[in-house]
Image 1: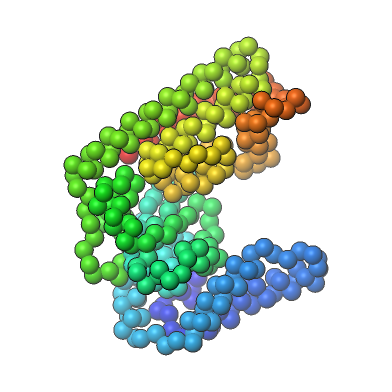
Image 2: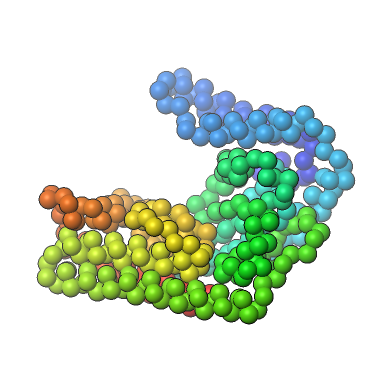
Length: 339
């Protein structure tokens, strides 16, 4: 990341492309192909897009005034102290600014679930009208391959005109996070909208009511899981627990993002939740072999408990999942109340 600390020039783009291509693409590819001919890294196509982007950049001269402006807006001295001290996040911000040149970047910190876990950081990247000619997926590929390497660092891309409309309408999520306190980079000169207080109050009330409606169903499934456990019907208890977790995630997404993701896949819901409450990924996280077994069992219970005759669950597993779900529900209630 050291090469990303100074303004981008055509020469630096060539140098960066050459170094990254040699260190991350050519050498690993040749080594994989030489030792295991069938093992071609899946990341190679994504990395190639980054290098092609840099090669294209190298063919254009960047005005000095633009580089000076970029340096002035994105140096460690302009970062808030907590961000300047976090080299991973600060380096990611610099990389995104230099390669994508967005209009704004908001940095949202999410507190850890417990003292033993790590907090999450989400970068909300706002793209201007000059970025509408390419799909957002193209820019996502560049960012993912170039700087998003930590499991507790995520990002999302948004068109400025869509974001402006959302804030003017007091969208619950964007109105709360797109604030001056979270702004870490901007090259925009036009004023940013401020949500109407009356609309914001209405949005908050609607979000709270929406969460409670969804959470009541999740809590009811947890109660049914307890009842099934007490009757030693462990397979049915597993299904009820899957529903208790799924519906709680969906209630969170409806309240904090204003969207209803109709899916039974917990991994898919965790991905969506990463934007508004990524600390919830610490729950039901398949980090170790035992955690993965329990997570897979919970995910399979939606269909297996109802349709597969050989689907079995141990008493001890239900006991662990009952407690995990109870903690998950409690934390969800506290987080929505705080927000």
